[in-house]
Length: 237
Image 1 (tube, rainbow, N blue to C red):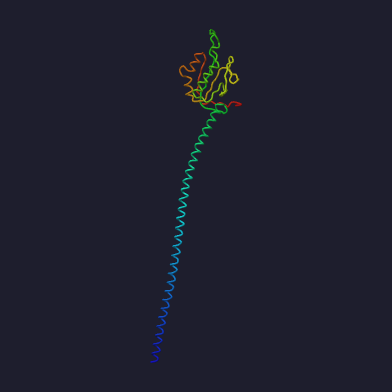
Image 2: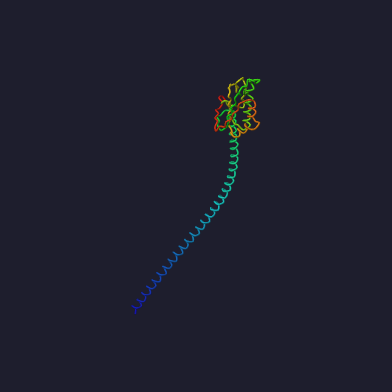
């Protein structure tokens, strides 16, 4: 009986040991689970704070970006105004440069070339029965008439027998020759002009114009269109 009782007690001890082991396992598992849950809770809280910080930084960056963008627009507007003013100044300088080149050309300081016309004036055939031989000679006023008509018709440069004229040139008659700025030229007198050949030709050939006047005064007049006339700058100009 004692033996059975002892065996029963031993069996109870085994059972209690198993129960305690199970309880211990459950307690340890519960403790670890609570610990893990607490850790997860801490991570989630930290992550939330980090997210809030990042959102705040993002908002600040967006506000700064908007401010910089508005400043950029203002700078671009100012730049456009500066470019517009520069463009206007550039046009003014370009016009001034063109005017300077035009004045140099009129003063004979630069070489010029282009289409134009050649007008040749010759003394008329002398008639012994005429009152005076001067009525058949090319005089300076004949040359002036041609030159003035050429300038009026838009000639940009004029030369007599290759000698280029300037704003201060003078022409005088000296017997059978004419003097251009003190240099003598015998007949024939070839007056060259650079410009629109068609316009220059029409201006000289107009009815009752220069050509008719000269022919009526016994001057031989010939006109030739040229595709290119070259005039060198005046020496010492």
